[in-house]
Image 1: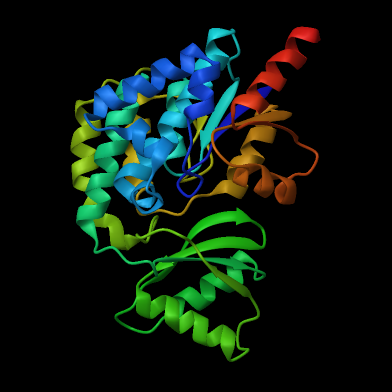
Image 2: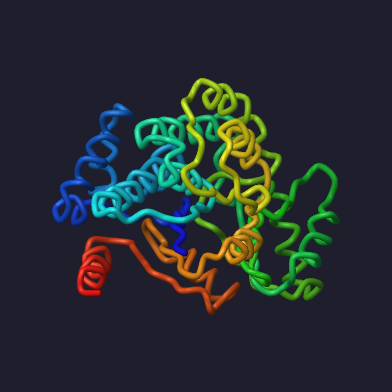
Length: 311
């Protein structure tokens, strides 16, 4: 069985979409649709930058989704479909398109409004998230619980058994950094290049807008199981999908549980459909026996199609 996985924010790059649109007309159509649906020159910003603008949440999120959906359109045109889907954070919207719960235009509009709601919910800060390597989740959770009063520190993503993303207030993140500097917590810390504390309570203000927008959107029963970030479990019911997309805003991404659920479903190969190779890197550490295929750009897509046609 085959699963399609879709990456989240942080995988964007200037120049994304240019070669893909030239090589595949199906991809070009999706990218043009993104400009039309959003009413802004998204593909020009993707192609030309500037990098600072492409990094802004209200552009990054629809850009990563549009690029992923462009790759997906090429696969679909050749009859290639998944037996299950999952996506990391905003990648869930790509997974829902792959499972035919959402159409591409609706998904793009939802992600744009999701991003704008997040930006309005919290002042932007380049000190919003950390990648933590080393401690297991139970140890890291204990340190989050010790965060000083008035500050926030929370696990935002269970990436591998010993790699996690953390979100929080600047004071909370600084406090944890000081604990590492003092040798009280043995961990490697790296800043995550985002401007908002995703998947924690600090973004709760974005939920009402997203809830209202999802209530008005057409969602269909999933053609195949979609594994959601909130609990890593498969779902196909539209109403439950809406609930989980809203909850995801303030809940951590359970990626380790997602991979385990894929295995229980019988998945033995995953295709990472979208920019970058972050999800493949996590998979190597979670389950190295799981087959992995990268579908990240025009060359990798063309190589995959040639292999399949020769088989």
